[in-house]
Length: 113
Length: 112
Image (cartoon, rainbow over all chains, first blue to last red; front, side, top):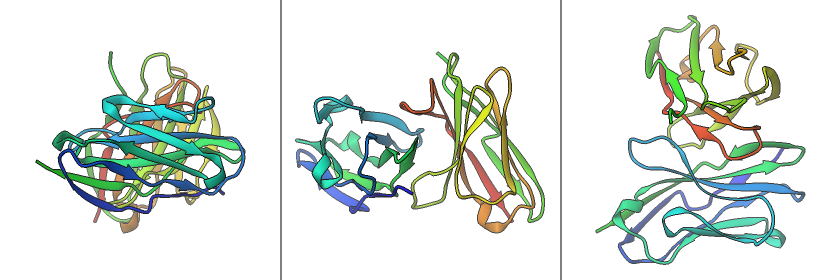
C-alpha cells in the first residue's frame, strides 16, 4: 500500500517569508500528485495537481510544486507567503494500481502579519 | 454552481447506534469518495464509488458500508458505533475518481 509523508507538521512564518513544505510518497510507479488546502472554516480545495509532463507545476495563489521522481517527492513552494495563506496543507498521491488518492497527515501553516 | 453537499452537518450518537450520512455530488460527477478525518490527521480513505459500483475500499471494518444511487448521490452507513468513530466524515466527488476531488464541508460525528 502506498504511503504519503509530510514531515513538517507545524510551520510558523512571517509574511514575505519563503515557504517549502515537504511531501514524500512510497510508490515508485506512475503517480498522480496533488496538494490540497483547507482554510479556516472552509472545505478542502485543490491547490495544484500533477499527472504528467512538466514536473514543475503552478497552482493557484502563487503556489508551485516540483515532482522529483528520483526522490519520490512533490514539495510545495511559495516565494513569499501572505497572512491569508494560513491554512492546513495536505499532500495526496494516487498510484500503486489504485488512483484513489492517499493523503498525508497535513501541515498546519500559520503566517504572522 | 452547487458544490458537494453533505448532510447532516453535525450528529451526536451513542455507542452501539448506527448512522447514515448523505452526500450529493457536483452535477455531472459520477464518482463519490468517502474519507474519515480525525483531529490532527489527514483524510483516510473509506470508499469510492463510480457509476454505482464500488471501485475501492479502505482499511475499515465491515461496520462501514456505502452505496451510490442512480442520481450519483451516496450514503455512508456505520453500524454499532464506537467512540473511535468520532470524526469528520468527508465526501468528495469527481468526474472519474482518479482526478481532482471536490470536497464537501463534511459531517461532524460525535459518538458518546
